[in-house]
Structures are given as structure tokens and as C-alpha cells.
Image: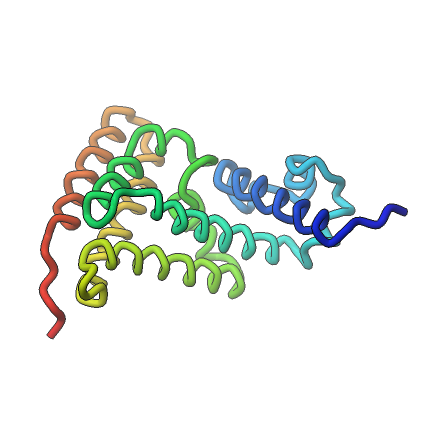
Length: 197
């Protein structure tokens, strides 16, 4: 029996997490069995338990990694509100709508995360807070806490808009939802927040 180094095991684990993230966003958590996930990673079913205790354990790790990577991508945007506006336009684009497997885990998995166990919900909560914090820091760099409500509103509007646009069979209406979502999100992003109290 071959022995693998710690580094090899970590690379393999990361590959499983990355491939599972794509599959979950494309087919759903419930629609993705362990055999499919392991096949996507080029591994046998038996190798799964060398890396994860259960599918729930994998889901929690995938959610944490997907949101961590999303927050990390914010660093590639232009600074401040301009970067936030770029993000809104990209997030609420037909390209993002039409490619859930390559997109945001929020809109693709939110309904299923709500039915997951505490580990996944905790991972999601941590990642969602980081996104809201990033939005607030871009809205009010001098006092991010003053823009927290605005950031929560912007986050929920963007995710809900994308989810609705994906659920519609009428392409024109779906496009209209995205366009109106951009207008509404930009209106929120351009408002100057007043200090709390």
C-alpha cells in the first residue's frame, strides 16, 4: 500500500473541495452524491473517508472555501465604491446567471444551506459576515459599522436578484430582473450612509 506525504494528502483534499464546489453549485448539494464528487476529483469512493468524516463535513469545508475565495477576489477590484459598483455589474450579469457552477455559492446554494447542519451553517455565517464587512468597508471606509445595514441590504438584494433571475423561464423577464437589480443595488451603493444613532 502506497504511503502519501502530508502535502500530497492536502493537495488531494483541496482538489476534492474545489471540484465539489463546482458540482454543488451546478447540481445542488442533494443532487451530488459522493461517487460523483469523487469521480470529478479523479478518485475512488473509498478515498473519500481518508479526507472527510461525512458528506456534511465536506459540504461545510466547501462552503467555507468558496466564501473565503469570494472575499479574497474583492482584493482584485478597484478600491471603494467604484469596485463595489464593478462587482454589482459583474454579479448581476447574464454570464453569472447562466453559469452557476463557476459563480457565487450564495445564490447557488443558499436554499440548501438553510437545511444543512450546524457546521455548514456556521461556515456560511462566517463567510457571509466577511462579505458584509467587505461591503461596509467599501461603502464607508472611515466608519464601516455605520454602513453595516446598507451592506446587508446590498448583499441580500444582489443574492436574491440572482436567484430569482435563475428561476425564471422567460429570458426577457430574467434579463429585466437583472437590469433592475443592478439599478437598485447601485442606488443603495451610491447612498451616503448616516452614522448610527
